[in-house]
Length: 147
Image 1: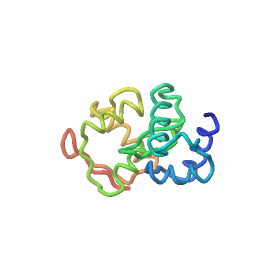
Image 2: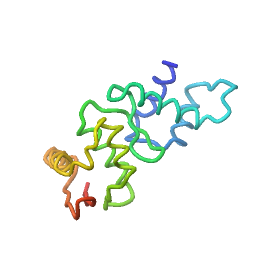
Image 3: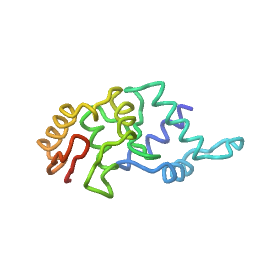
Image 4: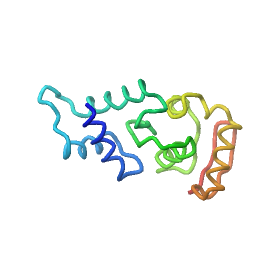
């Protein structure tokens, strides 16, 4: 399965993040699924989630939203940035919900999103580095982020 990890990594290398369906289609171009694998998307999803579960912060992958995956970066800030790019791709308004808490645990192996001070500090660092233009906390659970 090492070849599959390498193939997924090569595909994700060219994208900020990908939906599982698109990722599966691109992986199919480079890796042959065994004929016994009936549902390629389910297989790939389970493969990636298992890698994240077993390897935690040393996993090659991160889950950035519902069926959306990216490569794990070297720093927590870069992983948060990947998450934000996906999470805020359609809305600039971010209301932290239970899904986000789960992603925080999978990204950082701790709940950064509920620790408002930690999250705001990370957003400030992203702003200072020029990754995001600005952010405004609205409530304890709502943040507006501008790219």
